[in-house]
Structure formats: C-alpha cells, structure tokens
Length: 145
Ligand SMILES: Nc1ncnc2c1ncn2[C@@H]1O[C@H](COP(=O)(O)OP(=O)(O)OP(=O)(O)O)[C@@H](O)[C@H]1O
Ligand SMILES: [Mg+2]
Image (cartoon, rainbow, N blue to C red; front, side, top):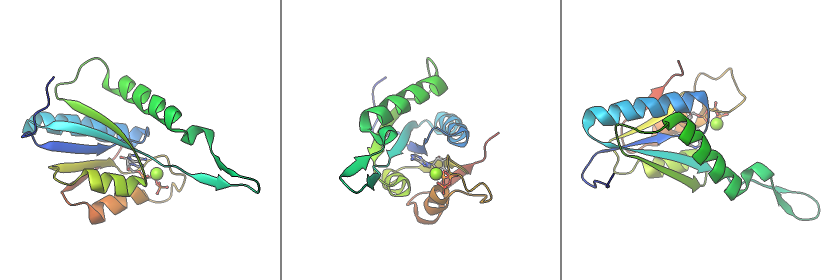
C-alpha cells in the first residue's frame, strides 16, 4: 500500500504487553473509522550496566534482538492483512519521550494502561501516565480485555 501524507496518523505504543496489543487493535479500528494510518512505535531502551571492569549491555537490550522481537511480535498480532496501513518503527530512547515525540502532528496517541512493569498495584503505568500528561495530541488509554 502506498503512503498517504494527508491521512490522519494514529500513533500507538507497543511494548509487547497484552495491554499494548489491545491498544494496537483499538488504534487500527479507530484509524479505519477516520480514514487514517497507524504508526506502531516501540521504544527500545539502551540500558547500560556498569560493572567494575567495563560497561555491559544486557543481551535482550541488544538492538538486533530488540528488532527481531518487535517484528516477530507485531507480525503475530497483525496477522496477514490489515484494513489500514500500519507503519512499524522501533526507536531508541526513553519510552515516554519517544511516544510523545512520535505524537507530534498525529491525530491521536493510543497506549495501554499497563505494560511489562512489575508494580502491579499502580492502575496506570508510568509511560501511559506521562503520555496522558504531556502528549501534544489527544491520548486514549486502553485497558486490556
Ligand atoms: N518501550 C515501549 N515502547 C512503546 N510503548 C510502550 C513502551 N513501554 C510502554 N509503552 C506503552 O505504554 C503502555 C503502558 O505501559 P507502562 O510502561 O506505562 O506500564 P508498566 O510497564 O505496567 O509500568 P512501569 O513501566 O511504569 O513500571 C503500554 O501498554 C504501551 O502502550
Ligand atoms: Mg513499562
């Protein structure tokens, strides 16, 4: 499918969590309704742990691994065809910063209420909270299921 610069863009944050896939499905339905396209954005955090000899990058934070995982997971969720154009982008950086930046000029930013974080007592993850507070466009927060 060819790109259409005039079409409204729905940006969605995908971190591999069930909640982010619910957000992705919601974003696709919404883009279909408004005649827009979907920008599926994953932020890949480059965490460096400093040992006592040299800095070490954790294996699953390696860019190649992150890219393969992102592509494979999105492929599984998206299946063969989609009713709208879905762009996939994996961007290095802090997730909230990356999503807020990607949302510039977009119609809508969609995120899940939770991600992969372990602080289950919070109703809202820190990334969705920061997006809700600072995104330059309207934000939709999707709860899983
Ligand atoms: N690395 C990421 N790349 C893209 N989107 C992300 C990323 N991390 C989070 N998101 C988006 O934000 C939503 C909420 O995730 P968030 O990280 O805020 O929750 P959490 O992991 O449960 O909590 P926390 O990270 O604060 O411990 C996800 O469903 C996804 O839409
Ligand atoms: Mg998180």
